[in-house]
Every structure is written in C-alpha cells, then in structure tokens.
Length: 471
Image (cartoon, rainbow, N blue to C red; front, top):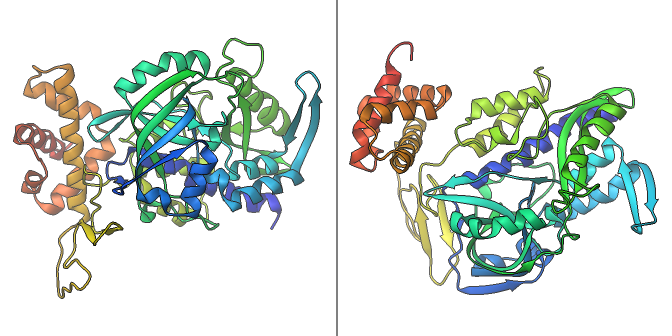
C-alpha cells in the first residue's frame, strides 16, 4: 500500500475525531471540580502540564489565569500541543519541508511544508476555530481563547457569559485581544466522553467558566498568531489523497498589508491547494464568517445543536467523496459518542454512570444504579432506561428551551404561534426520532419528561402534529 493511500484514511479519521470534540462544548452534563484549592497560572504550558501530568487541577475549586490575553480564536484540540505524541508529529514534519526562506527585514525564517508535513503539524496541535455564541443549559456563552504566549493553538478555552463578553469584545476585535486576569471554574467531561484515538492520550476536554475578568490593558498586537487549518483533497506525488493545510494570520492586523486572515485564506485556497495540488478544500474553521464556499463539513453545521448524528454521518461521508469507506464503523462510533445528547441539565449526573468524587469520604453521584457505595450490593435488577426514553427526554428539554426563548422575544405568543415556532426550529430528522420513540413508548410517555406544566399542553400538541401522516 502506498504512503498516500494509507494517509488518506488516517487524516480523515483524525479530522473527524478532533473536529467532533468541539461539539462537546454544547453538552449540558459537564462535570465541575468540587475541591478546595485555588491555583494561579502564569502560562498556558504550566496549566496543560498540570492537566497532563498530575491530578492537581482536579482538586481545584478556582483557577486564576494571571495576565493572559483573551482572543476570539480557540484551539481546535486544546492541550494536544503539549503531549509527547504531538511533539513527535511536529518533529516528523521536518522531513517534509517544501521550501525554506529568510525574511531579513523581520529577522524570521519561513518554512512551507508539503501536505504530508502540514498534516503532521496539525496532528501536532496546530489549528484554531472561531465560534458564535452558544446556549449551554440556560446560559448563552461565548467561547474564547486564553493565551499567555499569543499563539492561540497553545492556549485554553474560556467561556464568557454575555455580560462579560459585551464589556470586552470591542477591545478584542480592535486589538486582536485584551490582557486580563481571569478567575473561573474548571468544567470538563469524563474519560468516557473522549473518543478512541490511534495514539495514547490523556487530556480530558475542558474549559474555564469565567466568573470574573479584570482587564489590565490592551494586548500587544504583535504577539498574536492564529493558525487556520482545514482538510483538502488533491493530487500529491501523482496520487489523489486527503490532507491538511494550514496557514498563519494575526487577528490584530485587519487593516495592514500583510498577515491578515484574508491573505491567509487566499494563500491556502488559491496558491497552495489549487495552485500546487489541483485540489479542493473540504472543511472550514470560522463559524462567524465562513471562508470557503461549498465545503463538505462546515463549522456552522457541526456546532448547531440541531444537527443530529445522521446529518453528521452524511457530512463525514462527503469527506470520502461519497464513496464506500472501510472505516465507516469507526466513524459511526465517533459520531454516536459525541453527538448523542444527554438527558440532564445538571452538571454532574450522567445517565447509567457512577462518578466517585475524590474528596474526604466517598461521594457518589448516580444516574442509575441498583446499589451504590463501598460495600453496596444489588442483584436481579431490571432497568427501563431505554433509548426511546432518552430520546423523549432530550426532545422535552429541547422543546422547553425553545418555548422559553420564544417567551423572551414574544411573551404574548398564542398556542398556535408557539407550535409553529417549535416546528420551524426543529429539523425533520429530530421530528422523526421523536415520533419513533413515542410510538415505541406510548403517547403518554412524553408527560414524565416535560418538567414545567405550563409547557406540557403545547409540547404535546406539537408532537401529536408530527404523528399525523404527511408531516
């Protein structure tokens, strides 16, 4: 088997694995640390070393990031840059340098890797995304990057409430970022929410939920380095394959003559992908302002909570050109683990999972179990936590959230208008899933999942409408 053919599947799988992890930011069932320590960090590297090499971060009730810069571009794979596997990939990329040049005016070396080298660098932790506002539970959050170096793919993700975001965004947009002290709480997901990988990796997906931000000054506009990384299909060394490409830009240089995002995008698409390899870009990196036309897997679709597993699988298939692929089973496993929505809106309980909190004594947070505790025992139990009931629980939570949103924008909406709003804001695949679950469980099953009675009548009316033929 040739090298390029072997890399095609690996690159697509790596992309899907890392790309889908970003969807985890939308999860409502995050875990929060319940320890007593307060830890201060002056560098992103120090933070990630604690995450990777010790459990210090898990005994921390509050984190302070001292003199970090906040920027809009978050790392595509937070923390990956600092793993030993990532360092090996970046070192291996040195074997695939296409050209090297020296800019005397800037006293800087410029290296351009071929597609094999670019792909190794992306696996080494290079690459960023920009996201729009997201609703997580009952809050609207903005996910930004906190970086001590200015290199955003090395940083960590910080979630800002709307009020904090509005106070800072003008300076961030004007200067590329703002230097500040950040006080917050760690939110993360359990190891079972991590996807399988080809190499050992022990970085949990996490972000800092900002409780307080103290602006210090505008950040130095020269420090920022954002890497835009996308997947493309093209002909390399006489064989068609799928590879990564990335380039750099500085978000503070919006009005300069070089190093802008527009130049970065233009170079990747026209000079590198089309010009050198006759290729086509398949993915995007910017949800706020999509940069490429007709991509197979846009960020906007991935980060839309209404995009379900079937739709994600269809986009994954497009990365393979719509052709049958031998890794279909593994891709389906990736998708099912990440896209499957949880049924709870709390921050610790996970269905059918027992979590032991390592504080004094034993604390058990239980989704469903026959017996819990150090010496507990339970036999011959039958649990009825079916997939259909989880689907209905998800549907109820989604419908309730939609009705709450409508109350804010149109508090006098009639029942007919409420039902119309639900129908407009839910996808056909969502409706099909709910109908299938309701038919299997019985129409009365939805009653137990609508938590607030004032929404029950409208929710049942909307769902009954989906049961009618032709809807």
